[in-house]
Length: 355
Image (cartoon, rainbow, N blue to C red; front, side):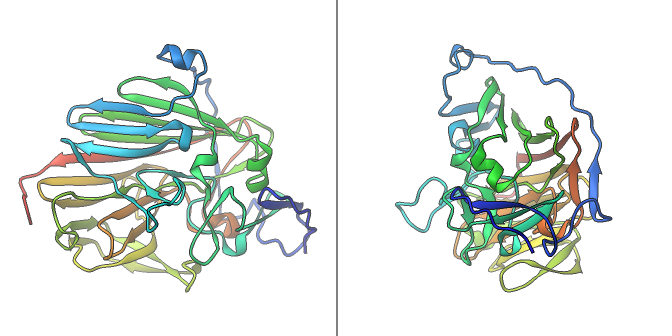
């Protein structure tokens, strides 16, 4: 059981007694041991030096151009290759808010995917998330999904140039601690070169608390100028995570062979465990290949693709779906240390044209 101290900001945090779920440490928890190094804060413009907010920031290199919105969750709202947009922003409602739009590349924090019943426990604390909270994202079933709404996160730009953007947020606001009661800092850096965009997310456990790690990124990709059914999808051999009707894990996995073929009418809304560090998935067609490299500490993926929408999400995740509750292979950063996960979106021209 747990006591219930209701808070209107979206969660109840309680001291665990019994029945709150698994508690760390356990055999399923991975302790991360990487010392925090001092991070220099650099502002490359007078506006940043004066502390003024940055509404948008453009990175440009070679044939690529990326646009980020630091004031709205550090979301990458555009990535263009040779002038053509390769990120999709999809909204079923034309009047949808920024958070309701499935947009570009967003950080899903402090958890990617879903938390069963909106309840989890860690280090003696129980959290009951409120799906009605304006701070949280939910799925169609009302299950808390993908963490805090991006526009609620107050990122501070600490470095900006024409090829690099770095921002930081301190997880110390009461509203944030009601959702995830572990004070720490998060740093997101984006670096663009002529071949791709590298995104690194660091969790800095610079307070007394240990910090469980369960975030993800959700690059939603599109191939302009070619019908979806002709897109070519490439995936490595993986273990499919068996899900229930609410798209939550049931504790089983199924080995799956590699796939390299047309997307056709395939639909996806599934989680996968990757076989090795450095796995790659890609979309190809109309003279372009877009690859997602799961470079460091992204051992899981969620793939979402509906035949009704011309986009595919190949989402890197640091932990399994529902890991905050199950503690399955859950990374944990101890006080004074840091954890960094990195993915890279590579874009290249190919000899294949309209097929």
